[in-house]
Amino acid sequence: MAKVTLELPEDVLSALRRSPEEFVRELRLAAAIHWYERGEVSQEKAASIAGMDRTDFLLSLAREKADAFVVNFDDLKRELERG
Image (tube, rainbow, N blue to C red; front, side, top):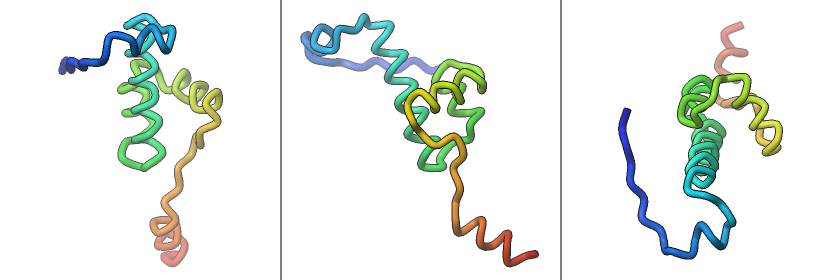
């Protein structure tokens, strides 16, 4: 597994009232939702990025009021034209 180090100003975690572990968990989920909504990753990959199984990721999407199903309308139009 890759490891990423992030440097933040000292007061960020206290301003957010988050422990480093909570911050990392929220950051991973936010990134996963962002990339999933943009269609850059699948639900399964987004769940993995967030450190969750797919069911928990879907529940997180609902809590965050994010779309659980991302539709690319150009792809959908092509599928409909095929019959």
